[in-house]
Every structure is written in structure tokens, then in C-alpha cells.
Image (cartoon, rainbow, N blue to C red; front, side, top):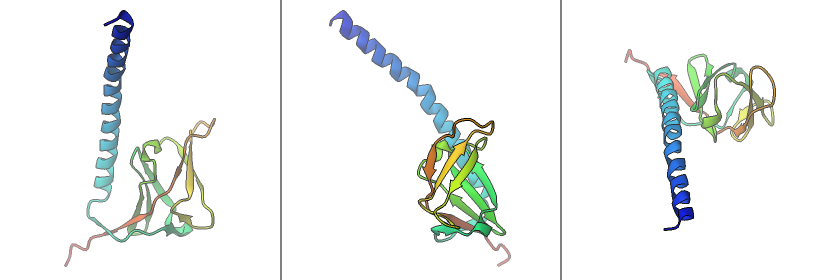
Length: 138
């Protein structure tokens, strides 16, 4: 084995070792987001997904890091996991770009840092899954 091959092998091994903590950190963030969403949806039951939300259905928005956009309309919670949930950060300001007055699947949202500056990633909305409170008095 040449010195060059040995150095390349060591470099590849080092890069692999460095990527492990990053992957573990990302997994922890996703797990935390999934736990937060599960707590929010406790006592709720999923219904058939819908493609759009009217303006009145999307007033109360909550961003769950690395997981989903959550809209609340009275007794219904709508969850949208988007095409790239890893870019969802509750510190950023979402700027929605709907094609009409409704917010629909395939519409885009760009995340902008609160302090201003260069807009962050643009992601595409997925279908909205409505969750309604389970009637426990039956």
C-alpha cells in the first residue's frame, strides 16, 4: 500500500467519523419535533387529507422544528409535513407564496431569518392532514 493510498484511506475514515455526530444530532432534532407533534395531537384523530386551506383556516400557525407546519382552526388542527421538513425552524419567519387565495398542496413557503437578511430555503407544501378532537364522552 502506498503512502498516498494510506493517506486517502485515513482521510475517508476521518470524514466518516466526523459525520456520525452530525447524523446523531439531526436524529435527535427530528425525534424532538416528532415528540412535540405527538403531544400536540394527543386526544385528536386524523381524518382524510385535504389539498387546500382557506384563509380563515390558517390564522394560527405553529412551526415544529424539522417536522411540520401546524395550523389551528377552532377545533381542528391541520398538519403539513412539506417536502423538506428539515428546513422548518421556529425561529424563522415563513413567507407563503400561494397561487390563489387558498394555501394548497404544491404552494411554496420560504423561510426568512427574523433579523432579516438573505431568505432561506423555499420548500413545497404537501397535503394537509386534519386532526379533530376525539369525543371521550361516548
